[in-house]
Length: 218
Image (cartoon, helix red, strand yellow):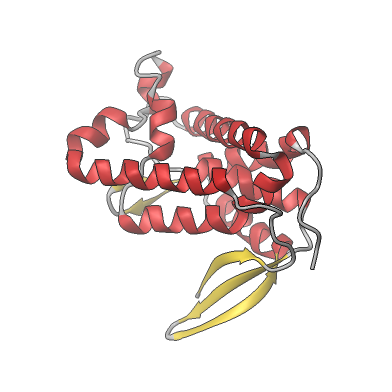
């Protein structure tokens, strides 16, 4: 069984989410560049925790946030970003949202490096920053209903799931798997520590970035 969030059915942003769309575009462009550059490009610009601890290749803290290991990796991340990002962008404003997103990615990276400081496994992906967005969504709009695709074997249907339930279960799964690295095609694995670190950052600091509330509930 799988659940794919699509959008917030309880509210809609007051304006087009330019920053969320731009972040998705940058991720796509970087991924296409990866396909052209091949393994050498991925090795150069992905993050290796041991290097960061040694003070080397610090630029990869930023570049790795926009890289992905496979088509399924980037598609999954971008779907989640589009499902939860627009409302948080609307809440924080475009600039505040961008700062929040990047700091969320930084917090996620710090958590992953702390979990395995001697690791030489490449780390890449936007999921830590997106986890911060999800943490912010949970504390800001917990009662909103998320239009989602529910996939059970060959059955596919649209369901409306409370944000608190959907995001809460997702976070619980990250906690259960904390410390594990699940194999994932084209990458070193699923960075659960990064997910947890990003999520906690988002949930704790969201109010600091909050502007005026926009997008009234329908």
